[in-house]
Length: 129
Image (cartoon, rainbow, N blue to C red; front, side, top):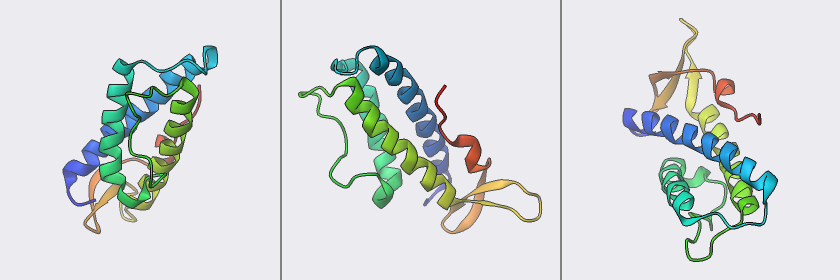
């Protein structure tokens, strides 16, 4: 990460990702092949754009950026991609945070240095409910 604001933005987007995955999982369990509506897709795409920017080369698929709003994906398609992003986000967090040996607190690495305080990456791992 390049600046402190990136860490704050990442944490916001990470929580949105988890919320979207939970929501769409519920929809998918009832109607997996139904298309997701444009309203929800607009917000999911916005979150994905932000994550793509922060993840850079660590994003899950090089040829996927956002969903096509003119060809609405099914609920299960959205779950597939959000699950992949969840794994990439967790890995990114693990690689870009460090525990301070002196006080035991976790910090984001900003330009290679410990900076913004966070928590153990394991606390942010997505778990199904």
